[in-house]
Length: 134
Ligand SMILES: [Cu+2]
Image 1 (cartoon, helix red, strand yellow):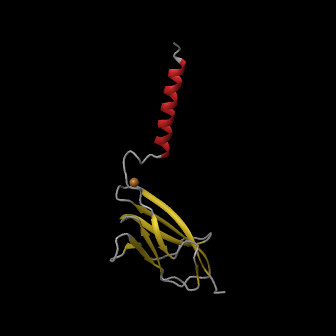
Image 2 (cartoon, rainbow, N blue to C red):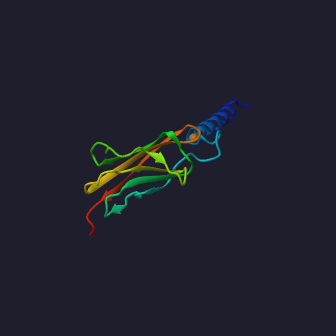
């Protein structure tokens, strides 16, 4: 009996386990999916006719606020000096940052990071546009 098929089988099994380990690293440690962004105001790719007074993000779980923040920046420019990102009183899954100034017309990017209960940091971004109403 040749050892070769046995070895080949073993390598395939190892390879498949490794692949799944790499593709789904969280599977073994947690059943719940990681924190993610459920909803935002403004919405991603929304076209606004009025300058927004705040950015609001709703996550799938309450984030740890010491690792959670959002920034707002005009495309290809530095972030604006907006309010601190705070949890809202009505829902600890929702965070908000006030925009104290009237925005100029243009495209804006919201960059956020949030720390899940398990300490993992998740990041994301989306854009919206503030423009003259057509
Ligand atoms: Cu996690």
